Length: 246
Image 1 (cartoon, rainbow, N blue to C red):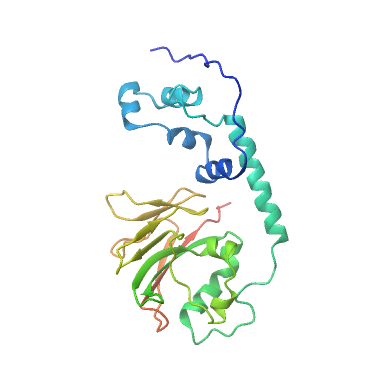
Image 2 (tube, one colour; image 1 turned 90 degrees about the vertical axis):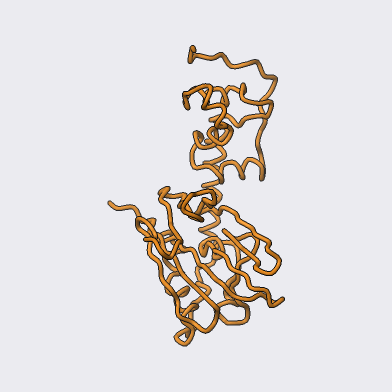
């Protein structure tokens, strides 16, 4: 089969502006990953060539859905990164844990010890919590600490006015009473729920897998810390070093 394919005629290209375009560029690190998301196992079975399959998607032959062009993807990715940097420059310098004596509270002390490194991107931290919500239902889940620091005021948590619990918008959240289960990728981690080895998380910066199975090693550049505390039923903190070696 010839690999040179002409682009079909189009009247206009979509702008992919706003949250829709942002969702695409946030979800995929590269344009190739975006194209791969449109390719099925059946496509690969018949084409037997991933590059050809990507070309068919990019040229609009894969489906009737509009496909973001490489130029659109690149421009929106750059705009999103610029927006992120501007937001960081405007962000308050005060840490949520600043000035608080947390010696008697091991979990909060552990979070405070990591706040600076997580905010500056030196480590990416996932927090596993098992406890009870306000309805006395047992819940458990994995929280992207960096995501919470970025989008939520955690000072009341460090002031012990509010507890930190898994929510439906976190990496994962499971209610053992209602059996409701939620999972969401974040800006730092991709949820890998279909692995034969169980639930895992892929760091979006270096693509390395963080393994949460307590019977296995946590993975390259990762560590597991069990927090002995009376504040919650169970707390485990997973740290993944994202600092590139020079």
